[in-house]
Length: 284
Image 1 (tube, rainbow, N blue to C red):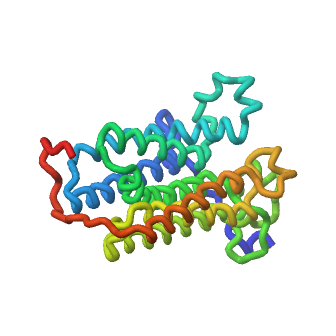
Image 2 (tube, rainbow, N blue to C red):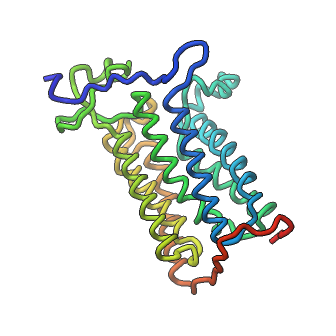
């Protein structure tokens, strides 16, 4: 019975010694590097200042980590962290929430738009979220390497047995589980491909909010449905009709629908494509 499924026995650490390098961290770093280069090409295509890239990278990087950590603290384990506030900084013990990361990025982009680009936040969101979809794909592969965030038991032939997971041994030993990390990763990869096509082939950046709305629906609608076959992250979700991840996804999906409707109800804007970064003294 065990041999009919996939036995997942991957060490989450690439290098495990005095210096530890984990697959999750590598996937995160690769995602940010690729994302930076993708956004750079879009900024260059539209003639934006190159210096914006470094500023935006710092804003988004900090906001992603802080937001994801605080999201986990407040949305999932507030009872614990309110009693042990010093543990909030112990990120190496695990505990990041993608919805919190999304909120952090939204705040960071608004600040960037007010103080740096002087443009509508939608302009930045439409371009940045293309890269974020790819980052999300790689982060879920990192979760796979960690043997975490998997799903319920399944008899499907592509079920995984996560033999390095204490949770799997406790709940599912001898059974294969849905590799929901792969499901989400493939969804985000497809979303990334769709948005790249929309931007580069259909010039959808000329309809403010269209790309951002597509990202929100693609990311959080898929998250909503995949949550039905994922394990609860915390105990209080056991008696909920919809878990916390699903409840937090609903507002993002609604916002995505509003943005897409708004984008098609307004005339597209005209964008020039000089395919060269703006001079350093260009303050627009």
